[in-house]
Length: 305
Image 1: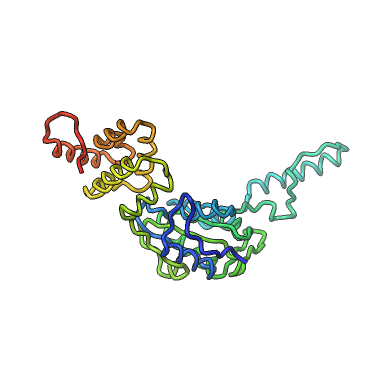
Image 2: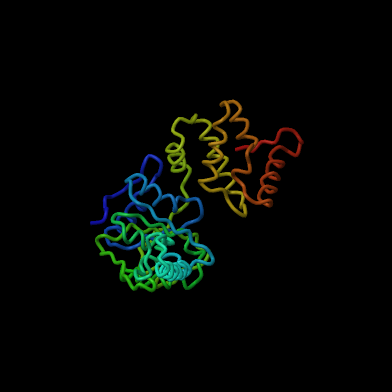
C-alpha cells in the first residue's frame, strides 16, 4: 500500500492545507499531482522535501525542449548490445583456438534483452514501492511529450523496449507523482484530466515570514522584516522577472554573514542586488527607483519603505 499519510510539511517546507489536501488526494487516488504557479513558489520543493522527510526513494526527471518518453521511461542500448554480440563471437573464436582467457561483457548476455534496457526515472519509480517521482517543468517539453504519457498514467504500466517486459504498478502502490509547470505553454486537456490539479499562489508577506523562519529560525526579527518589506516592494515595481522566494532566501543567506548594523545598512542600500534581480533592464529600473527616492543627490542611495 502506498504511503498516504496527510503530510503537512516539514521543518524546512511550509505546506498550506489546500496544497496538502491536493497532494494527499493524489496519493490516495493513485493519480499525479499537477502543480502550476509562477517560479519560486515551492512547486519543486514539495516532492523533494516530502521524500527527504519520510526517507523515501526520489526519482527526478527535469523536462527540457528535447525531452522524449524514451528518456523518461526506458531506452534500449543498441550500441552495447552490438558490442557484446561482437565480444561473444570473438570469445567463441578464442575458445576454438584453445585460448582460456575471455573478453568480458560485464556479466551481460545477448540472450537476455533486459540486460540492455536502461531504465529511466519513471520505470525506476514504478519498480520501487513508496517512491516519489518528480516531473519538473513539463511545460518546457515538446507538445507530444505529455500526450505520450497519457497511456502510462491511465494504465499504470510501461512496456520495456525490445524485451517487451512490462513494469506495472497497482493503483494502491502508485508512486507519489508530482508534475510541475510554470505555464509557459498550456498543457493538453486530456493530460490534465489524468491529474489532480493545484495552483500555488505567491505567498503573502505573513506566509513568507513563516517560510523564512523555517530556513533561518535564528535570524534577527528586524533583519527579516526589513528584507521581506523591500522584497515585496521590488515585486511591485513591475519588473520583467520579479524576485521569487528562492531569491529572498539567497539574499538573506548572504546578509546573515554580517553584523546586524551592517546588515540593516546593506538592506536599505540593496547591497547584493544580484541575488534578487536577474535581468539588466530590471537592475536599471530598480536603480532608477533608488535615484528617485534619494532625490538624485548622488549620495548613499537607499531603497526606502
